[in-house]
Length: 264
Image (tube, rainbow, N blue to C red; front, side, top):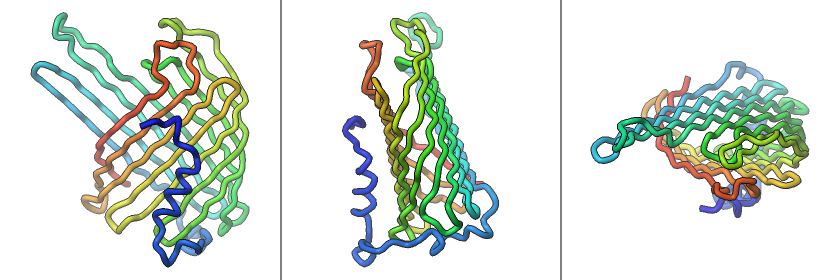
């Protein structure tokens, strides 16, 4: 899996390839299938994944994720909190070795030109800390134009493009360097497909093109409902940095997870 080779058009290709033959050339406005007048509450879901091993290798892995979304009249909001931690017991010294510790936060608001408009203006921000990458932290802020295209009652895609600003603090040889800043161009796409009443597919990709580094994130997931509130979700995701000051670090980080999702 090479995230660096995933162009933004992958989302478009997935969307068109997944269309029923009868709907491949038609698009639906948001108002055709979204009740933007009465939907005022937040949609929220929490994910949790745990893994424990014992015997010759003793490990503990914990993953938690919170998703928030709201679509009402002229506004569409969404936020994500994603946390991952992994520990392994040192069989020689008996201590605990931290093997993974990452948190990712993002928030976005879209202002629609009218409640039934597919076009919008967006503002986006994100912040990430990962102790096992070449950065102490990475942050992004961007604004721009967004559009939602609905190909059928079950499939829609979001596209976004706009300028922004990034800041990060590199780590070289275990030592934090001075903070770096850069102007960026953010491109993002998201595909949502309600396969059936009990299953859903989601794919997203974003690229932040900077002066020296281009950061790309991609994620694909499929979920199946257990009941009205619980679902089982399988996710594959990756983050790629085109340039690292510490050449001993890998440019691509991937994650595969199976989590239990509670919607409320």
